[in-house]
Length: 338
Image (cartoon, rainbow, N blue to C red):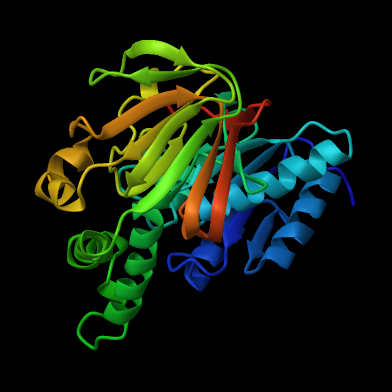
């Protein structure tokens, strides 16, 4: 395959609702010949990754949401490093549902014109180092067990139901589906069943607990020590502040040290969270049983198989989850100065 030095590869999730034939045709008029890739499966994603690494593209833009970004960055980065090559720089186009990473980076025009975004991003776009967490062999900005994974399942259930309603159909947005599913399904289900029990063990450098202002407090938690043990409704890790649709689930992520990620344990009662849903969304919710830490490597041990969420996509069922900060940052387009 000829080298594509100076060229930009664009990878679109062919299963994303916003990736229509019309959009693909519009992109095809902006992107260089042979530089637009459409992925509908893991096998296709791996083949595309091989083509991108072989072609030595300098920049790769992903379109399709957080899950598409996680899948392609993981596959391309691992393929490049296995060949002794430097991974390309990455960027994203706001074409997903929750768009957590796009919220965190302020990526995308306010009018949602992704074709215009595509035209202004390229080889000469400024970039910065960006840290990801390795979870289940995937490189992701966030992951978790409990509330987030259950909420993700309910979101998909509600969205599927709404899309089959004759008067709603394609007008069923992701935001509407989340607004219905979280208070109507997720929180009531969590309130009616026993909370999961989790044991969080520090497997890396010292862990620091944070106070209500996000400042380290108390003694450092050493490698091998237990960070938390008990019932909770969620255990989450992230390097970015936002979950989906601008929900600031990790309010201290913006001030975290570059060699740490945020660990949040939600041990509050789900009905208390529900009563303060707006402040939780804004990132101002505080409670003595809402625990925040800075860490770089933790293992979550669960009392029973529990659903995981990795980068906004289902991660299967597991009785343990290891999350460690990947030692090598990726190069990500710096949208603050584009």
